[in-house]
Length: 188
Image (tube, rainbow, N blue to C red; front, side):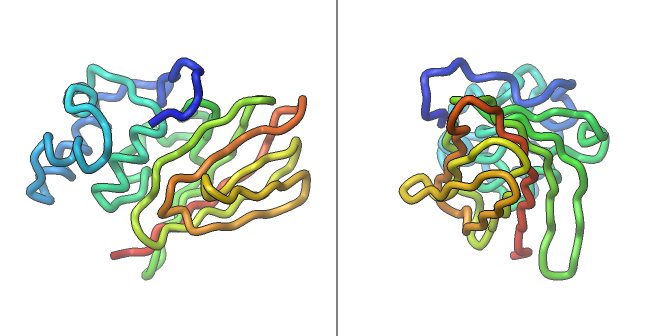
């Protein structure tokens, strides 16, 4: 799922055992086989098996692909302990700290603090239908949004898009991007 030549970095800077257990439980609750979820999420069966068994530390892109196919926000897979303040989740280019999860009757919201190093880029998989992302940039210049039509924002600017399609993040120029990301997951 990674779109550039950078080496994928581990998604979490903590133990993945509990996350694997939650993903397995979610998959089994949906009556889905390991092979079916791997195929639908576009990840290798061995990768998913390693994730469920706690022996693999997947990229952020892999976690988003799997949770999108399970129809749950990323925070559901992370649970409360790994989402403690200061826990960093990494993608190919994006480092995200989950700050808060908000539950409302119609949607779940995840608030992240993002850092994208200067010149870094990644493409993230589609979330489930109706998911939206809202980014506010505080420093640097970020090209972000649907992979086929990204938008650009600088300090103090905000971009929103429906993220149920592949979408990209790219830090333009020589300054790291610092931003917040709010993801809205409508309840199915």
